[in-house]
Length: 420
Image (cartoon, rainbow, N blue to C red; front, top):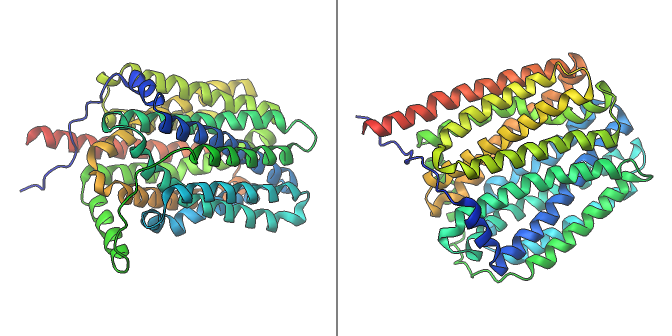
């Protein structure tokens, strides 16, 4: 006898746009959303400025990959436990403290001027990322207390879309700042200011107090329960495998994209910002299409098709000979990334009980981060040895395999459910 299939009916609630507007009318959610939109704009600024600065100082894809690994490592090392610890502390204070510390740390990057400062640069990046690991679960835990239950899905969707769009918009703005004298330092200074703005908005919210869990062995028991749920539900296992395989390719693509623009296509910093801006348009279009046709779309279809289209757009960039030819693949990549992300988020919300959601999501993010780090480590080595274009082709193939796995497992789960 087969175990019960966990995959729920996969319709998506329509009216997402009107529900999102209703959520934004609530003062506390609006304050949280505005603060994070500003902060994530700053994150996008620093992301491109940091990659550009390291690339200018070293000219090595390995050095760029090292920075990406340093930024990602804290999630792998602390991610499983951060959510549980956040539940033991005042979440609002965690968020404000995290914002202010990260703003202070980012200012330290202003003094990085030559290759001899790279060690200092990596140390600050590591500390800044480690502090940020505690912010994410705190925000996720606070958000439900700022909106009624019926608006939670729309609020999460709006927050997710804003995170993506603000990050890419920050990269586009960085492309402009990096054309000015002292561009990286200016970008880091602006980012530090965005953290202060975020802290001020977070200070305006009044989240409901949460019950503190018991200390001691409860930490290990809670983690074990979340991992057990993650690996005993077919749809969640499908997401782990599909995204884990795909990130082996996409991670390398993300690391090498800026060096590809600057070193292969010979695009200046302003041009890089314009090209990354094509992703913004794609994400906006993808989010709009998902919202308009939500009632007709299934999360499993969004994940499967999204991964396959993303794979083709990544592989297509390998053959781009002129900068303007990269605009369409980047647009399509942004479109598909937004669609599959919306599908994955919805599927998780439908599948995972509220009591387990933080632990399951934290465990999933940490597992996928491990896959991402493996990809980024390989990107630096392969980029220098076989060339960026061949790495893009390999990335596309791996992402396509991830899409095939998603189709096989997630749609099999759907078929089994309808047989029951």
